Length: 213
Image (cartoon, rainbow, N blue to C red):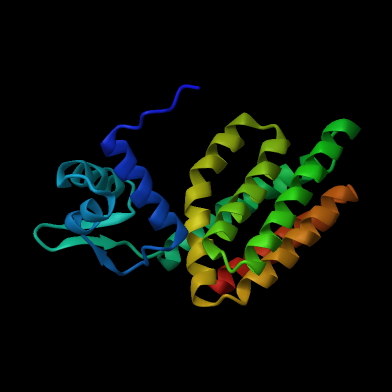
């Protein structure tokens, strides 16, 4: 079996980005090339290149000789992301309730598996894992909507969504129970083929997310 060889710069980029999205690197905190290079056992040069990519993505702000600031999730960013998600997911959820029987059954089974995995992550206290599963749950609904333009747009929101959820549950772990309950209700609306209920519930669910932020 061939093992993937990841270039060291790409490895540094992936590791730091995952820590940003999971909330391990907290918004408002500082990190540095030296800190990351020591943890990964690599030189500072690939870390510097990774930091530059992450700055371009708006996740870090670099300060020469001082380090890198983890850019916090702003109220404006949160509102923009949640508003965009409401538009995309309302359409996708309505379409998901109208899928042919076989496709509908596969979607319900997949969402049920993801919901069970979320509940397991909560029991294990794995809030970062939960945040990733949360983002995937919503992405699968969008995928089922079948609109390629909206799907690609939603992929761009997915990382922002994951980071926002990780931030929310990090500061108030009790919020995760509310989010899981919301997912259960959304799944029930899809399973019952009730687009009106889904539209109402996705609005409530995203309002809960806004309140948590």
